[in-house]
Image 1: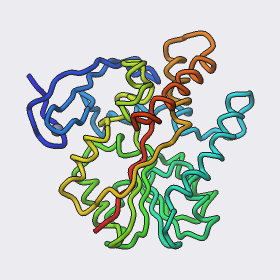
Image 2 (image 1 turned 180 degrees about the horizontal axis):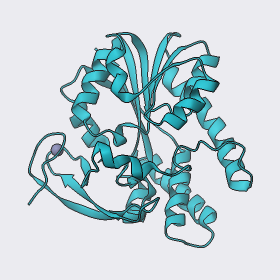
Image 3 (image 1 turned 90 degrees about the vertical axis):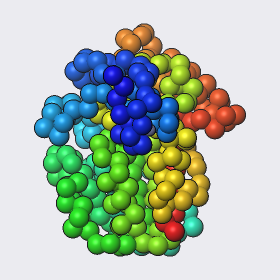
Length: 291
Ligand SMILES: [Zn+2]
């Protein structure tokens, strides 16, 4: 029987791919495609009680600091360039104000925002990540279930860096985003793009499917459909170019290929070259304004 699309409730869906949780459990999940709105969604979706076990890895939140070796060093270097890019992308044309980072992790992005004079709030489900964030930044930090404590129309900027794909109830999330943003405020979403070159090349080994932690998988079409009837209007689209390399490297590692860094670098480069022509970047950034 066809699974119902979690966004548009259409029954016009079919299985698109079988993907293993290559990061942790090796369990296999289905990815279904909705022919009506273009969303891809993971089945079965672990319940709130079960999902914890799929995050039980120290590596997942990249908490560990001061790791030794070439790859962690490279990762740190890219991370700092990336943070600068993220800051510029998120704040271009805005005056300093209040920012909410949903899925703030250990607080890297909010730390950059604070250093530039923004008032910060973070939402983070992982207690471990939150504890570290608490020591690093002055932000108000809340659990996702505490989001209702935040006041209506109180934020100039809301950011979700690779977070919306982890959220089960899309409708509720979009309602909250609309509630929390000021009129004229900005929403920034960074999401993996299953129409990118690296996604097409690696297929079920594409690291950014990341099942079952990613419940939904987006492309430009499905993002347009999801926000179509909301107060959030898309004003700009951008990309995170380093993600093509990182995702390709991880996809090579999952397949136990030799020289994963070299192979991943080549694929990442090809992905970015292709995206220059067709606009399908490995990680897309969508920027919205609340009307
Ligand atoms: Zn749908």
